Length: 359
Ligand code: NAD
Ligand code: IPM
Ligand code: MN
Image (cartoon, rainbow, N blue to C red; front, side, top):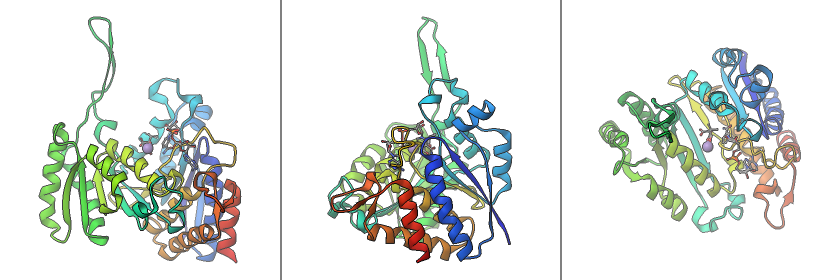
């Protein structure tokens, strides 16, 4: 049976890393007879340039019609000063929201070969395997009212609204409890319940749901402490569940534990497990077009897509094994390069993956 994957390359390094992920998928598609067919769509800056808006109707329609979406990254200085309602980021947020992709899984796993590439001591990060479950369609990212208004004294004021309702909290907490049950049995809910009412409710609901998961050991932590603990002793965590903004920030910090943000994949899932798969990093305008981008976060996102949306576990395993193999062979893009290793470009890393999968 054929499966339709929507490829959205995006901006900056997005197209460069997408090419390598597609090369890998093409091989896997053949080897495992997955019947994947591709479609392509525009999002972000590329869509603004072509159509005037960051999320064209056609893209949303294609996204709704496919089995899974594989996405690179959007954004860049070219579009930073346009009307904020049509910025590239709005396109991504609109797609997440339009598809109700509320469950964002961001696994931070240290490949043992990269223990030296992390900015933390090898003993602090070796064996690291954390899953950050980030709420993706609510919280301060989407809360109304929001905007920039002019006050009576003529001064301007920017404002946003941080809110979560019970349904939103329950459904993301369920994803996290279920994940913790299948993994190490530990869940840490991260909030700011000492200050923010929205997270007082968050904590109460998560606490209440713990009754249904006696096998999961639940703890709560304030987000400031969590940021500190992530770099002090990250291996204390198994699964972390948190809101949209805190999850955005903590996952970038967690990325560095794995050696580079270029290593962190993600899955964004709806209630039926349909999803979009993308690296956690952005469009990296500072290195775009230079062959310096690490394609592994995107390649590993493709593996997550096979695992979660296309029911192709063995194919996902094969990609992850190939990533391990190229790292064993010493191939390193600049972001993960350490002394004695082979410095390679984005496409050379792709070549190494192709070789690992076919030899
Ligand atoms: P960024 O993640 O793009 O880059 C941060 C730093 O990490 C840069 O130094 C960059 O070179 C490096 N980096 C990122 N990905 C890398 C990779 N694969 N290999 C090697 N190095 C990598 O974050 P930023 O600079 O804050 O944002 C740049 C643009 O990307 C902005 O427009 C932002 O809105 C957008 N953004 C998009 C997404 C997304 O599409 N999901 C995520 C984050 C940021
Ligand atoms: C991410 C990004 C996005 C976010 C931006 C580009 C809207 O930082 O995917 O982590 O904040 O969610
Ligand atoms: Mn982010």
